[in-house]
Amino acid sequence: MSNNLKNEKMNAKNTKKIAQLNQQILDLNDQIESLKMQIYFHEMENENDMDVKTMELYVSPMRERNLDKFGHASDQCICCGKMMNQTDEKFVHMGVDWLAYNTDETTRIDGFDFITGTDTETQGFHRIGNDCAKKMNGFTFTYKH
Ligand SMILES: [Zn+2]
Image (cartoon, rainbow, N blue to C red; front, side, top):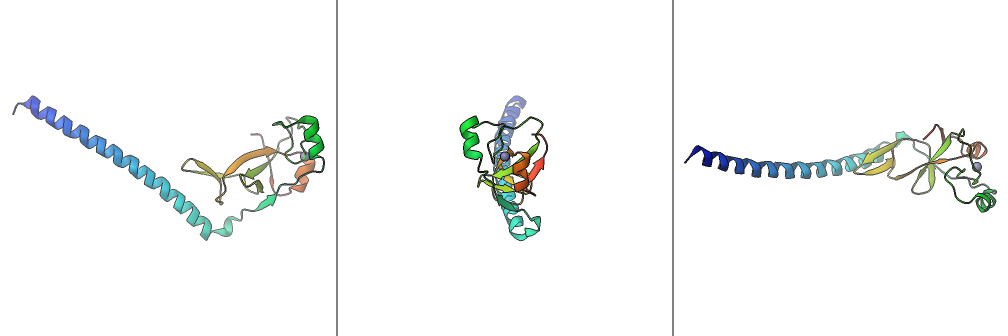
């Protein structure tokens, strides 16, 4: 057998092997993501010391009137619909269950952002005015997003 032919055969073998290994890597990554999810939920069941609490969002009696007046906008208080100043920096962290959470941390698993310590996905942070923030004591965060 000529050296060229030997090399060609070896290259073909190696190419096939590499393709197989790449597929194995993809399969293992899927398994890792799935295990991460299992571990995350398992830890939550066993560790209630994370102490994540929820609270129903305060709904101001002024909300309907303000929404009629201002419509729905991004820069308004989620509780009363009042328009906010850019200097107002208070936020509530809402889950997709429309409850407020007392943690601002999220955990990303398999492309989903969970509120850390819960199995609820986050819907992100909503602005809240100073007056309404008093009704959500312990559930507001102060910073810019
Ligand atoms: Zn408000």
